Image (cartoon, rainbow, N blue to C red; front, side, top):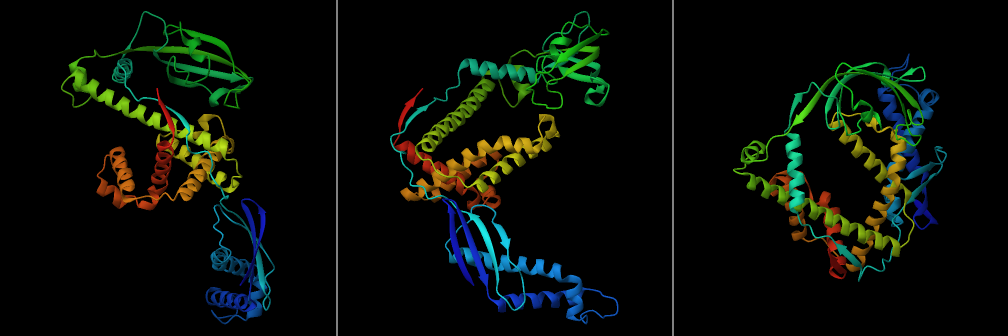
Length: 422
């Protein structure tokens, strides 16, 4: 096997691989021999069909299979021979396959850029102190009260914001029915703008049994492109109004929420949880400041294949989240292709940041130690409510190494940074 490499750009290489005729012939012969044993042709017993007949019927299929096998068999060795480590899916350009002749193919691959990271010492970092205030606790407890509120049907007054209403609804965009036609017993919590901008305000003031007709103009930049820039003619028949009755904030409520002996015990737990959230937020904010500084000080070409893979991963995460919640991702008003395009900017920033951290770790000789892994496992155990030993059987070190190394590099940068606590 012979290989030649051509440099296309900082992150692109074209590798031409030439294979000996003997390897090509042997692979072709084995492919036809395997085919003859399983193919059924009229007038011939299994394994007895002449090669000329097989070539007549299956030449194109065999060539495709042989080329695929040759590439898969020799590609890793070719990359090792040229000391190339691809970071995205290779693009293969096949040559012509002929028995008795050498076969060559060319592979376009992307590699990590060579980055000599600069400007990572003495960074000026603002760190937010993760303090849970009394107002934070009160706000969280109010959310608890809302989630435990009972619904009571109201008569004798009109609908207002924060009410839960049911109604029959029919809308038209020109002659086309909105949402496929008339909807009955439609449920809505007023004030959350879950249907369309401005719709909730039209319902406020209606009494049960009343009907209202109105036109709702939708902005041209609205996310749902099917209705953006249109005017929808609605007819709404209000049926019921229900009001949230929140429980009193006392010891009995604390016992209803969970295993708390008093309201003070619940408050302590809430305060601790808020502090943990703020700590994570503060850490993320510090990370973003570091990434922003490194990206600004170290321009380089990013392999677009890595960006595409990361954007695809982000889209799959969102699709999985919607499926777990029983929701349709199309409700976002954008196609998967539009969402993918939206994620590419964030994906490029994430890839750029990861490459910078990898280059910095290599430059400074930073390695993940056993203590680093133990700390990561301990945090995951708390997150997933499992023991460290159980997690180790489910999650290998290889899977958490990127997170471990990111923390290692960030801690190294922070050790030489000018930090101001706010």
